[in-house]
Length: 298
Image (cartoon, rainbow, N blue to C red; front, side, top):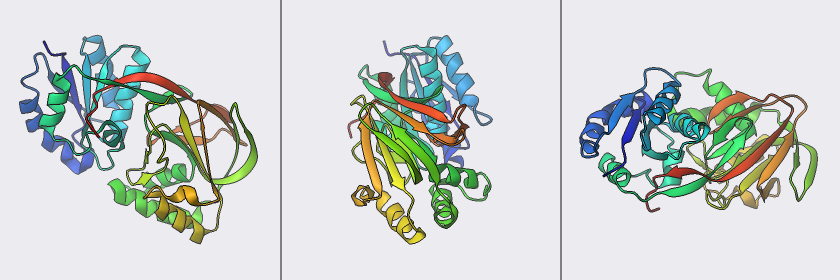
């Protein structure tokens, strides 16, 4: 017998793409006994829906929406401590999670078939304070971009990120960061960006940590030191191809945990969701094999 599957759909994701997928989802998952499809009605609903699905005994939860939807479902699973599988159906615009799990190009019926099978993979996740992340957390430039996106609601998806990123390239003043690992201590320096990545992908467009792996038990910290605006443009363009690591201002370090220190408690993003740190010193660590996922061949 197949495991019971709960599909959580954000109808607003991908400019309404999530809503358009619902009929096909109902058809595709009809063959899995006990499967249910639930929809969100406001931002953050997926967290409560996922918690209830776990309490009701669903063994697999499918997140249909953007990366924010998936991040909230993943956090609900991880905080519950239950051995529940996560599957991701691409329904947003960036779909970085789906890239990690190999389902970025998968149709509804393919994802349903994968959920009906008993095969799964365990992947690492990162943790910052009480927040888990699958892709990355970041400080500095990416936070400034996300904050400005919140002030430009007329833009959506990757176009919003690129537009605001270009604006911030010339206006962002940098952030002072000191970094410590078990192998190295780097003193405070001005950074344009500090991303601690569990997977290669970032912002729907960028391959920020091209060597990162979700199965090695480690995190890749990509630090880009402050540079003049023209240099920033070149490095941002290179980051879309994953070739920015060749710049001398880009420092990459791999470790199981990082302690990052700031002058004051910083704002940070975790899988694209904004948060404010409780302290000026923040530890970011890897949680090896913490999440069971439905993964397609990549």
